[in-house]
Amino acid sequence: MWGFYLKELLPTIPFFLRGLWMTTVVSALALLGGTVVGFLLGILRAGNQKTVKRLIGAWVDLIRGTPFLVQIFIVFFILPEFGISLRAFPAAVLALGNEAACFICEIVMSGIQSVPNGQREAATASGLSSFQRLRYVVLPQAMRTILPPLVGQFVLIIKDSSLVSVIGVVDVTRVGWLTVQRIPQGILVFGLVGILYFVVCYPLIRLANRLERHMTVVATKL
Image (cartoon, rainbow, N blue to C red; front, side):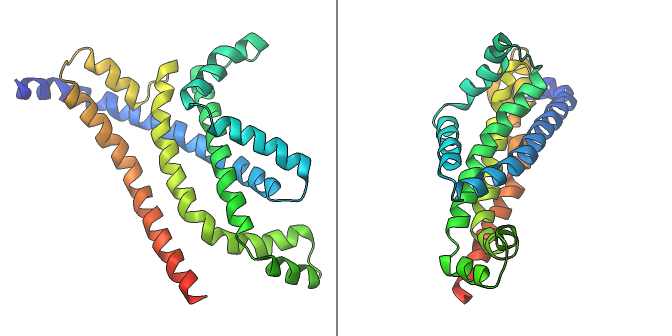
């Protein structure tokens, strides 16, 4: 019986690979945009402008405090009521990128705040501008704290991308749902889905662990 279902599953492998490609593209675009925006928001939130910090903090708390599934529904189903209509793919990238930006914002802010004030004061005394202090003094030191959780967050965002299937994006999870309607052995179908996600996420997990060990060694030498 299991051999029969396995034979039925083999012809669907190309469709799973296409779904995996869609998952990779959606995740990559969301992470690219989310990282850029997240760094900008994190830098602003770590600054001295109280109003800006509060506004960014309110948005970040809202996104972090609500389910990602609800956020997807808002982008895809609610925004059209305000004249903003998006197809499934850009809606998925926007929702996932926004989530990534908010979580990365917190990581970047924490990393910047971990830099001792004495470093900033020394840079100011050296005549560096605010941008120069950030570029040459603060960020290089903050990256030691930022990188390990940042890579770990990438893994979480890729796993969250499985939810974009609910709005019709034909990612690897969607392919799994379509396949299990024809092949009732769900453990085979979604076992394959899990393996494909693992293939994408495992190198990042290893990278995050290696970065964390490396940064720990660097910190002990300082």
